[in-house]
Length: 449
Image 1: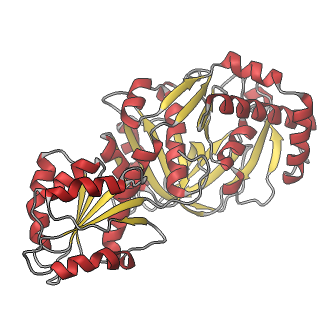
Image 2: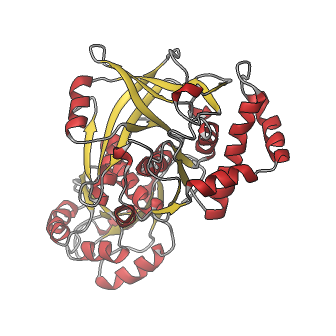
Image 3: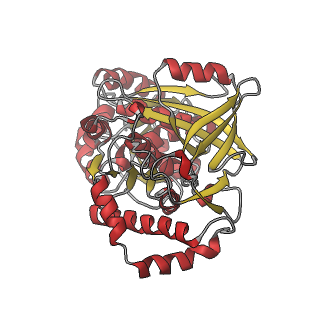
């Protein structure tokens, strides 16, 4: 898994199939060169196989062609009629989710017949697939294909993710409980138990000179009119300690038991981590850290860990808030202010928090909870709008293009939790495909619902 979000393009291995005894074989052969021109290459990376798929003997060399290529899914495109058993054998050999593209035109003679014949064995064999009936280049078809491919990419690229848990479950937050083995079984991720003792020792071990040097570099980037250097330096010290622990354990995501005894300490570090591409959730939310990593991949941007702190149900608006952890790359403000966390909100509360709001634009607000057999994800599409902070911390104002009361009640009746991950863009379709491929339940809330 890459730590730095650089934009997201799923990678498809494309195989053109044929049957040389039928009309359309010349058209099929030409697709090996012509198909890429029909694809939105700004949104997808294609690896074309130069060999046509016609007989069982073609399967092994085609599989070898894709070996170690890093493709996320397979795209099978019959260029004309193809023997129906060849296609599921090809998909099974590659072992990846497969898109089946049925071309309905006369040029691709018999391609639609071939696809309709092979759907039955695909289903009966339990192969993971998505069927599209469309002429080449259709935007509607590519939207569906790329949502499926994005879900497949999350399945593949998240395997091996290491989530560092610094502490244990935060006090009172039952909904952040997690089933470590279910997470490994379902997503292929590993929870690394760092512990609070090691975390606090790491903070104490950071050399003062390192803190001074890093704060000298960071201070000009913030508005520090309402915070002392002493408080700010503690946030920097905590960040450097977290960074050292992440390096020691090869972590790509972290979460800290900040509530209550360490409130404010890791806020700056979580913000910086998320800007650097290391998913960092609050309050020991391991599933939240996993979902933040998935959101980084999908959006190519940092993600924001929040509570829904209040809502105007009549206007369909809600305020998403946390103590002060907003990644600056998501902030509306060019220069974010730092303020000490109010010490009265919990024992041990101490450290700098970011006072910022999220920049406007389409967003998805998602929550992942559950254990083996109950794991589930919900996603609410909304729009972030300009907002002036009413209280300390980091926040976003979201406007929902559907009945917010009904949405909140649906989420509550399905037993979702209080933490949400905010990611850039409307991503419910991709998250839904990810859930389908991993076998977990999915509840979408979109304008089209």
